[in-house]
Length: 302
Image (cartoon, rainbow, N blue to C red; front, side, top):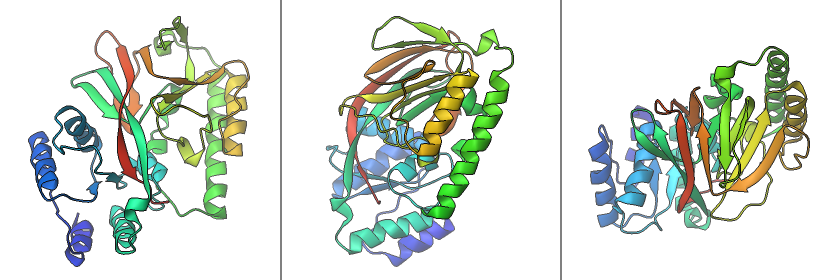
């Protein structure tokens, strides 16, 4: 935080509020609304980002959803920050980029609108808001959700390719073993018939890119989310790995893999899951209800 404070001290017209408790978020948003800020920059772990979304959508503390949000990288939300254009992991550097855009008068020209996911049935919390949900064998690779953001270029692409190859090789070998019944996940999307299976990856996202900057590619309506499922079989994993190396999931048309758009889904699982890079578990009955809800505006830095 010292580096963040140093950047803030050099700027002008910046209202800084450090929150410690859930109630502090309401006070901060209320003050930001009173001074009519242009942008709200958020740095924090899963509780802060999700709680901020909740306060805006359910308590209407901003009096308007037109104030855009800038998501600064904070380790567990790097995938989200990277989707919105961050090209380095240091939050104070991302803040410097944000302020540079503001000085150049370009900040409000880079706004994108994105719906949120509401996740109900989270153990100990009840519900959460976020931008991407992930379950399946892939979430055991915790480093994937803490991966540092690096500047774009040939070196970055080469490193991503190596990471994808390592992931696919390890997953391919594990998929050849015996499947465990407790790892099974039941999915019912858009009120269609439920499907039960063992998944390498189950992804629901309103973002345009997934892991390692791989584009989802699929066209979707504004009030929908991307849905990608990859069964935990060697062939399905291998075919998906090829798409990841290509840099685009679009074109999934082989057995064991689905790409679609959804508005809601019921998911039953006993294993942990990830929302916006942080780990959670479902209530004792194991059932989660995922809904695409209202849109918010975000700053797109790149």
